[in-house]
Picture 1: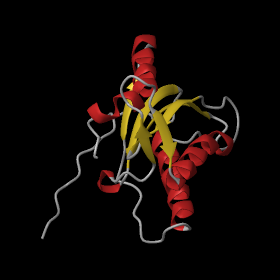
Picture 2: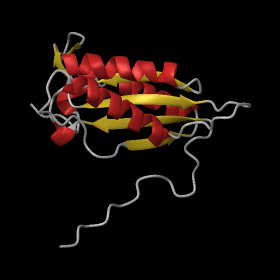
Picture 3: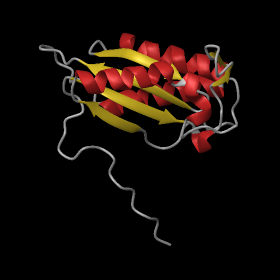
Picture 4: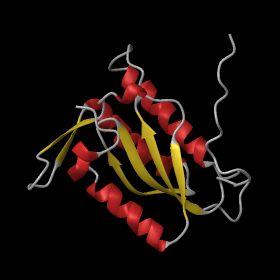
Length: 164
């Protein structure tokens, strides 16, 4: 039986290791709520209470900046079953090692997070295959995404990834 071919999700011909701002969304396997619970939606500000897996994911996301000097996590939110982040890549002007691609960063993040989560529960599959990315092209685009990340917990029950 021949499996269906996966459609390419990256912009053809674009160098994802070049300087730039990128918006990424990484989902859990089968969109299971593994990372957090959002409480108090509505009039009160929503509170995003991270589960142990969510705390691991948050720490590993922050640690990407320590692993890669060229990378900054500008803004992020850990949702119950996905993560939104603005990733900034500033390539080095000198040095022997090449700048990592966006896929390299996500692969490292997923791998280390999976390893640490499996120390807590060996039976769970954490991640959905691949991830969504968007190249942020200008300040208007950046501010729209920043606001989306900032308000995402308050609008969780309206989110396309929402699963009760």
